[in-house]
Image (cartoon, rainbow, N blue to C red):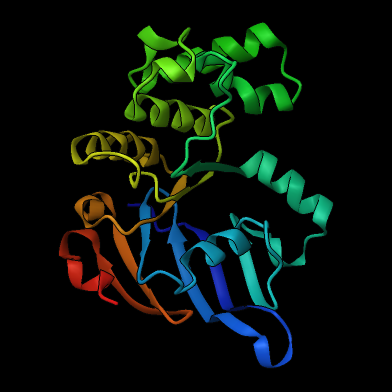
Length: 240
């Protein structure tokens, strides 16, 4: 495994609300994620996992602390710089597939390239290559309504990978899938992480996929509680 640090947070803080109603969600988070690994964030609902991802990706501003992603100081970027940073550096995979129903699988996977003003034919050709790599080569012309849940998630993964992101952020990517399909999806993500220039961070409650994580970070009450190797993680990390 590479020892290059992909993501570093130092004393990261984030809260919502004002005065007596304010809730501190991140309470000084210190986190390191490495290139070439899948890092999993686990813990009870409301412990700050998704907020942490949102702050790392620049979707939310922090209230204090520092964030570096592949050497870039995200916490010091302007709003426009964060937008450009996300376009060039990040890919996202969510529990809900968020595919556009009127587009084919190839067109859906090509959306990030089209947003970057890559010509349509070139974008669809590149998306088709990525769909082939995730086992969807025979479904490139199908609309989402004709695809199973697992197939839709594969298209969503292809969409996240098509622009060659260095950091892939996945929020509950197997939550809407049955166990076997979830395993297949994680195998695809595992293969996608086997690069020295890419890091994958996965938020999950699904203990069945812990074995795919290189390290499992347990969160509780806005803080990092534990860090263990993926093959040593147990369901105790998910206890409320």
